Length: 130
Image (cartoon, rainbow, N blue to C red; front, side):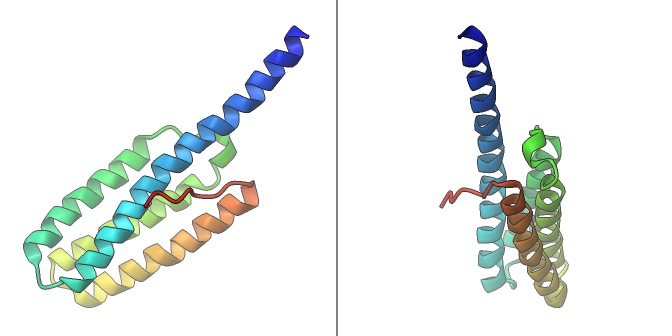
């Protein structure tokens, strides 16, 4: 009976860990997407663009350093690509490159579709955080 309880605890711990990863990834991506949408409406505001670019760099660094459970390891590179594309969009806004901003924002959102698809393949989904 003890080994059955141990197995049950082992299997219930893994999804919980993947769940915390999914919430962390979702929070990072949701924030990046919301800020990118705001910046798109205010591309003329270079001070805002600089602040949001610094935040985007921090998101990429945080995602690069966070622990990734094996259950979702195949999806994490796509999470990084999403955040890096949003960072490039913010950088383009700082430089006044509106076309570059739009291209990078579009790439981020396309990569998000890929991330969601890979997670679905693995039996997971990003939780809604907003």
